[in-house]
Length: 75
Image 1 (spheres, rainbow, N blue to C red):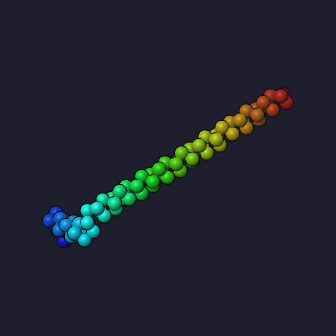
Image 2: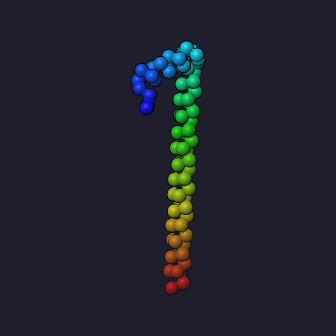
Image 3: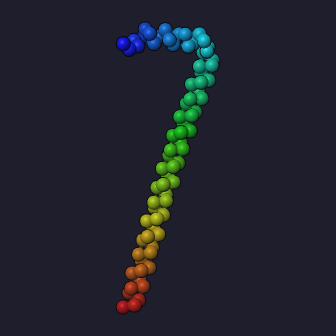
């Protein structure tokens, strides 16, 4: 047996009576801020990983160019 819509409405009414609308509004705002902060942290982490990968590829390309120039100079 699951919860139906009338059951959920009764639970919501009890929560509003216990906590009050102002407190629920504050909880909702805090939850929204927490989700926004989490998303920003994930995005910054992904950006940092991308920048690190690009730097490594660039360094590898420079290294390959130096090796090929050294080979040409020896020949």
